[in-house]
Image (cartoon, rainbow, N blue to C red; front, side, top):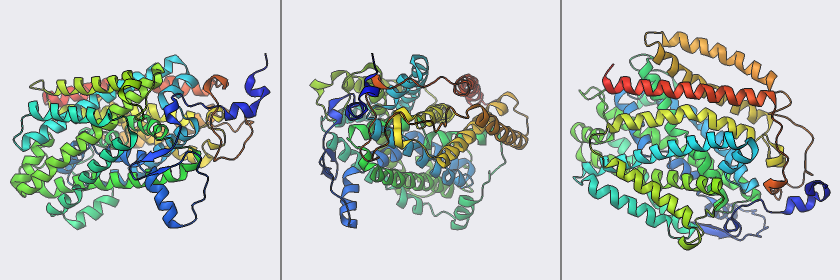
Length: 546
């Protein structure tokens, strides 16, 4: 039998690849609606801004959601222990955020299929399970840290975690179970406004403007380039650019019904979000640096709760209260987005309805998975005696270690012409994304080497791994020639980019399992197993004081 997409390519292109029919229809955002068949041009700035207001959401929410409880704690730890000397890491993360998230914007708008489902379909069950199991474990641990943030923030105000945590859990479930996408999005924007308290908080700590400007643009490490400093840098990377973001934004773009026509607006949403998250992260780091500099608590980070009390002692009660409020607010945003990313992936893997446009009775497994994750994570936090600060830092570092794996799958999907057609990556974007992937690997390798050999000179390790990175790029370019970044003959007629959508997955040809692709996947997965084990060793060392 002749393949249907060969016999009738027009019919194949017009068929919908969207898995849930609720993902098709009008764009209903927090600040406006765009009709499904709207083809009108936006010629004036007013018209463009109104369209941006309606579409804005997935990019901003995913970015601000990344300044969650773990983020607040990690940035505060950096400021308390290293002053403002690590600010430069945030500046370098802006292009990483934009490049990674722009790729998932295209994947979501063009395919209409979630990230988890695409990995299963294009890489097979083994790699699909490898990716999703990592995601589910990391997401759950991260959600636990969100409730740790709620507990620590509430304790500052004298509210017991046994009261605060269940209330926030119920609030999260109620917001999500509304059955209306725009209602959920409006609530997220309300919490984002609350997150802007980081700006007055920063000025109340009276930071040194000269130090801030210097450390923002001149890389350095107060106290030297040590293994612990590297661990914190990886935690900063892991909390600012986390794997869950890829899965969340792609699915949220689909759920909001954004199509290729509106990709430029969603790109703008993502870029705005990237700058907002970095400004917020810098504000938290600067606050802790300014408040603890020269005090007995400098270098003595325990957890986000002790930071709030330290700000109260060294500056003012108002500053401590604002920090605790920001911590709770950030925890709620993060918990909502990360839990939703998990439920979206659950729907992708098991082929169930998974849309915030659906009421409870139409998507019971989707909402049940969300509820179950929230309840279980909240219950774990109420177990007494857990080392909350160490758990938070370790989870962020774990995210940093797993990010290269998620980035590799993303890069491969964005070079799959069957999936993205005319929307595949440009050569310059492949080069930039590959460089980012290499740097992430070098950071995690530094952690591995310094854990195995604690007395090794970290500077020597950096120089050696830099040379390996350059040689590795040359070898990978040779192995992957004509495969991963192939510009092979298109499998479908290249029509207008604004209307091209991926055909149903069943009609796509399976990608060729090239040598370079298999080498890259197996090498990275094997390394990640070793890196995660080394992270566990490092966490135990920190917990025992060795």
